[in-house]
Length: 406
Ligand SMILES: Nc1ncnc2c1ncn2[C@@H]1O[C@H](COP(=O)(O)OP(=O)(O)OP(=O)(O)O)[C@@H](O)[C@H]1O
Image (cartoon, rainbow, N blue to C red; front, side):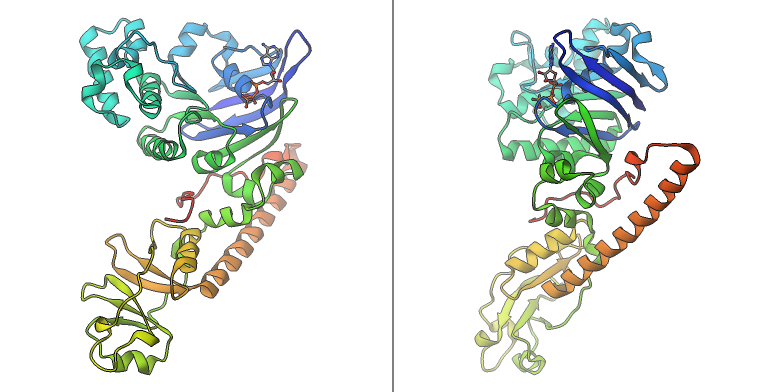
């Protein structure tokens, strides 16, 4: 656990970069610092590895003040990744990754073997080991930066806008890879970004900073979207926060039906008897084939003989959110979303009204839960004088932010 206790940083010119910041970054989780430019995010990050020393308050790692430790020894346990990777241009990729192992005087073979293992872990081809940084794309260089920070297997990783300098597609890939790695490694990560979408996607907890080095809110992504602490946070998140909250409602909550679903070999008469404008046609293995509109049904034969409209995208009822389901419904010719299992077989369909009812119920349940938590926190605060700012900032549930859209 990294703990900030009333941390202040005032530079000699009078600039207050951090103003009495108190916050906890839990072990094994990703805490994201986000906020306005100049809000103190980088300064806060650098107080953890003593690149910046506070003028007031303390930063503790597992209860011990970082200032009590020698910088070199402290930094050995803290990986550091920055924007543009900051690689040594005249060293090969493997030697860049092995920088800390070499400093720790590991034997050369062990250091290089570790570098090669890490290259594989972060998705770099083994053939790149002997290349130099200028022979890699920006995204590949960032992967090298992450591998280098991981080389001595530090329990803590500090990441300062590591994915900001690459295009959106590469950034998306790096984020996905990063979450996959973290699911294996469980590092204690502090991640700085100015991008609220990145914060919501990656963070277990989000700390929002504003000008003057003031920490305005610390909460889970769901809580930040549902209950921004003030107008500043609400404005920072943007106007579509309601839509983004849907990413946290699992699609398993959606009510699915088999209404107007027919196998391709079902007689056309069955579709007519159902009287629906659209029929979802599936194969013998329950894989969706397409939508048949009443207008294109042939006079006789089977529904599979009709010219089918494409489904667009389906949603995975286990892995996707209601946001992805709603997107699928909006893009579907029938206005209904097709829910499938991991193998792509039909589980059921939901229309926009069904999904809307799910959303209303989930939001009401969440509000009731938040009310219960804040009532509990207020009672606790009254009992022991705790700061209720951190109330209701529980860890995110298993369903991750998927950005919707599939
Ligand atoms: N050495 C310094 N001397 C004086 N002021 C400084 C110094 N370093 C940083 N600052 C100031 O401290 C404030 C916080 O800077 P910091 O880099 O932590 O912000 P940030 O939130 O990371 O910003 P950005 O998103 O733009 O990187 C800024 O006003 C900055 O100008």
